[in-house]
Length: 420
Ligand code: NAD
Image 1: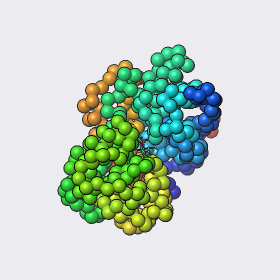
Image 2 (image 1 turned 45 degrees about the vertical axis):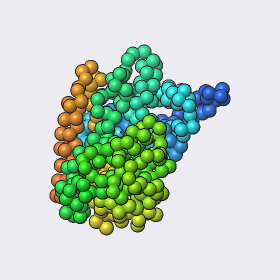
Image 3 (image 1 turned 90 degrees about the vertical axis):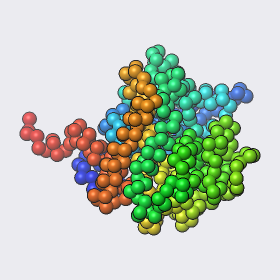
Image 4 (image 1 turned 60 degrees about the vertical axis):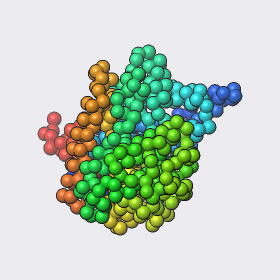
C-alpha cells in the first residue's frame, strides 16, 4: 500500500529513506509496589517514529498485548495521520504491557507515574507529547502530567494532551475522535452512496460498531443522533444486536457507569450475539473501534458491510483490505477517520502554550473545518489518481512529509549546490 502511495506522491528518495526506520525507540522497566506489598516490574515502551514535521505525538496504551513492534507500527501510523491532517507534529506511540483491569486504582496510579519517571527524558512539550489510547484516559493523563511537572519542577501542561479540563485539558477533547469520525462520515456518505449502494435516508442506514469504549460508544451515539439505525455494538466480552436499532444513549450511559455492556431493561428486541457475528452483520456501515487486526484473512469472507469507517487504528489487515476492495466495499482509512482525536489534542497543546482557552464552539468549528478540508483533499486525490481512499490519504500525507523532508535538505539540493 505504501509502495503504491509512493508511486502517486512524487516525493524525493530522501523522504522515503527518512521514513524507513523509527527515529528512536525506548524500552523501559517500571517497578511498581503492589497493594499486597510485593514488587512487580512492567515492561514499557515509547517510540518516536519521525519528527520531520514537528514534535512527535501519539497515545499511550495499557494492554496485555503491548510490545515494541506494535508500538512502532502505531508510531508510524501517527506520523502519517498528523501529516494527512496537516497538524505540525510527527508521530510517536507508547505503551505498557499490563492488563489494567487487574490493577487497583492506586496500583494504576503508581504504574502511570512510574512510566513517566522512566520516559521523562524522552518526552517534552517541544519534543514528544503523549496522549490517551486504549485503556488510558483523562485520569491517567492527569497523573502523568502531575508527575512530569514534579520531575521538571515547573507546571508543564503542554507535555500531555487528553488531560482533565481542570489541568489544562481542552473542551471537546473527550468526544473529538467520534466527532471527527462523524464529520468524515457526513462528508463522504453523499459521495460514496451510489458506488457502495447505500440508502438515501439516515433512518434506513444500518450501522454496527465493534468496540464500545471512548471512541466507539461516542460514535455510536453520534450516528444514532444523526438518525441512523445502530443495530449492533460490542465490547471485549459482550455483543448486542437489535435489527430495529438499539437505544444507544442509555447503553452508553450504563457502559460508562458500570463498565458493562450487558444488563437488564434493554428496550425492544435485543439479543446477545458472539463478537465475531457482529462483524458479519448485514449492515450498511461497519465501524471497527476496538483494536488492530479485527478484520483479517480468516473472517473477511463473513463481512457483509457495504462501507467500513476505521475508527480503530489498523482494524483491517492488509489481506482483508485487498479482498474487501475487490468486492467493492468502500473503506475510509483510520488515519483520516480517527484523526479528530489528535486534531483536538493539537488544539489542547496550542491552548496550553498560549495560556488562552477556547470555548466549545471554537473547538468544534475548528475541528469541522479541518476534517472537512482534509477529507475533501483526500477524496480529490482518490478521484484524480483512481486509487482507494487509504492510498489517497497516504499520498496526501507523503506529499507533506516530502516537502518538510526536502526543506530540511534534500540530496537533490546538495547535488545542485555549487561546490564550496
Ligand atoms: P477504549 O479502551 O476506551 O475502548 C476499547 C473498547 O474496545 C473497549 O470497550 C473494549 O472492551 C473493546 N474491545 C476490546 N477488544 C474487543 C473485541 N475483540 N471485540 C469487541 N470489542 C473489543 O479505547 P479507545 O480510546 O476507544 O480506542 C479504541 C480504538 O480507537 C483504538 O484502536 C485506538 O487506537 C483508536 N483511537 C482512539 C482515539 C481516542 O481518542 N480514544 C483516537 C484515535 C484512535
